Image (cartoon, rainbow, N blue to C red):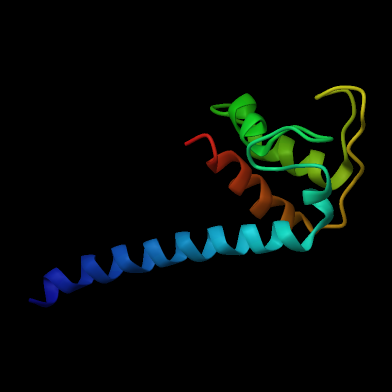
Length: 105
């Protein structure tokens, strides 16, 4: 019986961690100014997060690229309006990048 419980507990823990991670990313997103220019589904001032996710899906350096764009800003990737650097830590930028990239799955 104990042998059956261990895998079940492990799966439950992974599911809870994934759910907590998603909630953390969405809460983080709401606490930053990102939402002034971006939405999940529709372009605004900047591209929709789903479009960003689709553009970088499957690229080995996608997360690193997004982290750099989030922390340092970018220009000319999605049109003439530049994205300014955001006041986030590298860890927060990584959480946001992972969340954005998960939207294409």
